[in-house]
Image (tube, rainbow, N blue to C red):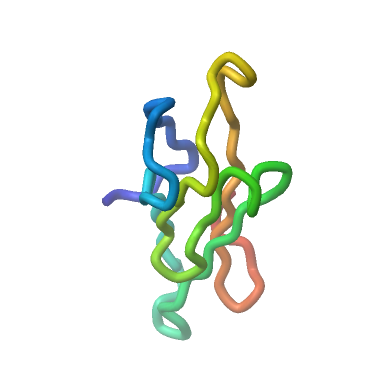
Length: 88
């Protein structure tokens, strides 16, 4: 997957809880020093409706979605290497 600064995706309202729903990617520009990119997600949805695996960059659904209650969600994911933000 080629890295981007912005991703767009959709998830069916009846998607099963616990399934991976999206994958992001970042490239470490200083691969000579470290190839380990870590991912994190900003509030308010992290840990409530969605979670991201810090290593695999996979976003997983934690609760059922209700499009009548909220039609869409904007998620902010950060990628970092040794504490330095690579992309946002």
